[in-house]
Image 1 (cartoon, rainbow, N blue to C red):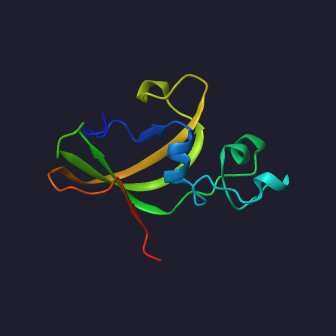
Image 2: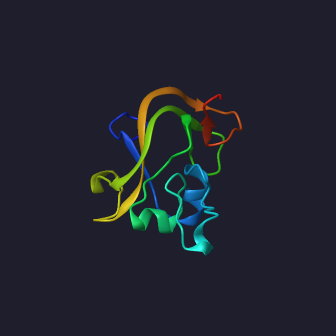
Amino acid sequence: MIESGNKKEEYREIKKYWIGRLAKCGGRNSYEKTGFHCKKAICFSCITRGNGFHPKEYTHVRFRFGYTKRTMLFELESITIGVGNTNWGAPDNECVFILKLGKCIKKNESKDSTEFQPKNS
């Protein structure tokens, strides 16, 4: 559905691995052991306490077809947290990371690369 352009969002569980990939602090909150919680960082406790989500700034996302070299590169419009569309593979009534996809840049590229491409600072 992503390849045909019908699916405009992709979902990832709110777990330590994806927090590390998608959140600015990478899931490390230096105030956690003191009882204070940084409103500019993110970790599972920040999400559940409603302190906000501060995503890393990526411009593109690359999807792979399993372990092959076949990929698709899309513009990444935003990363948010919310309840996704179950018709597109999101779990029922569960908050997830939502990757909002823009236009497809390249399909079937056979180049090795990382999944996300950061914005230049």
